[in-house]
Length: 201
Image (cartoon, rainbow, N blue to C red; front, top):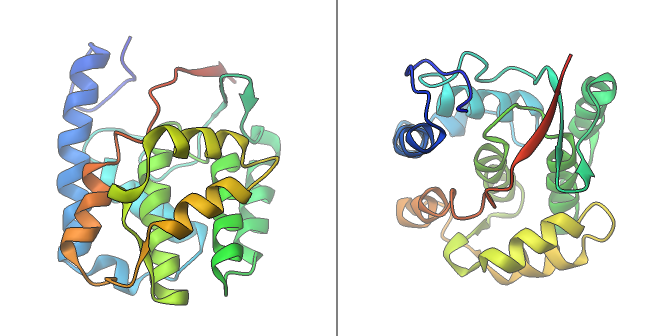
């Protein structure tokens, strides 16, 4: 079953295709229209704005906090009861160095604030912080999918792997549309396609 959507699609495969097409187009617009330039780096409000922009043509919940508890494999993301305070704490986390920025990214992944589309939104959010704070971005074409997914899975316990993987892929081509679009083109490649378990409240 597909998530309820504005496109009226009932097949999850059809929805995935349309979601990819539309969110890639919208992500390109974020860059081309300079929308990200006017948003504060490292704030949840910015991630919220990114998510809303990417998915507002697809889901009613675009930019809104999830109303279900989520787990992936054996890992449970932040329970709803703690989600708001977790996001407030993430907003306050330092972000003046590469290590601090990745630690913030890992915490946001644990929070997983949205019902769908967390990975894509958070990678744009991560690059926005890196660009503003240390004048670098990730060239996602240099990040191996399996290494990334395994490192992100382990990152709540040990973040050294994800730091190593992302640091090796840093570039100073922060204003390159081509580099930005590599991240967008690779976004579905990094999702992992693992089924999320939900508990409706």
